[in-house]
Image (cartoon, rainbow, N blue to C red; front, side, top):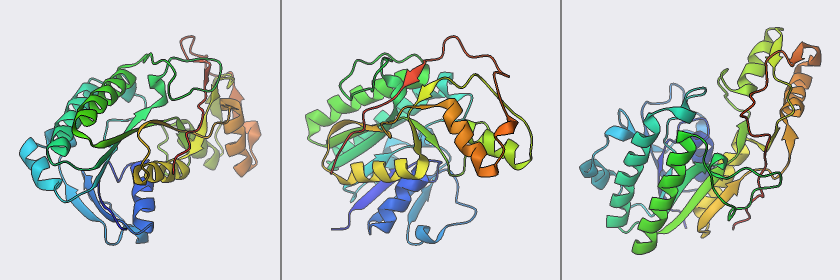
Length: 278
């Protein structure tokens, strides 16, 4: 049965792939967005949109107008500006806006709510991270995500709304900004310019952004409740990812590992145990 789904952040780097899967599987999707897409892909036809200046400015009265008659809310809207978001003061503002929306979801008895968190909520360990592993956020971004998850869990447990929280690991591919690793690599290599990198020994769990979007959409459409890891389950070094992208251009010789110093505070390994849901 087609579902009526409300999505925030549905035109973003990750959110657009979530919406694409929901639309292509026949669901009735409404997207809240800060701006209209300059060019709309074919799959966007039929998607309803509500344009607002910023989700932080949406009032309770507006949420009460926007959300009725939906049976699923997928919430992705957050500040994820590369290079700034980890310690931005806007994180608390987005957390507050999320709770404001969630209170209306509870009031309207919407059956299911899915939020998107981060693997950085976990306490690092030298083994794949499980969904019930200890948490220990080391940035304001991760702390606000974790606090939001806990508040939503309490709120929706009391109301009976199904709740799932997608902890996303490291994304690459798609329309990456040059401030992200993949975007920087493509930008430099397209122009035959050197790519300055750290040692590249850091181990990460990388997942193509379109696959991550599809997995979040499938999580949303399932009956799975609780925390879910959106990851590949594979350990990949930064060096290996960089080399795989350089190979698309046949230019590994442009990669300058060690040109930048390693961050002594950087977590050496972040890999997840992939969550299965249906």
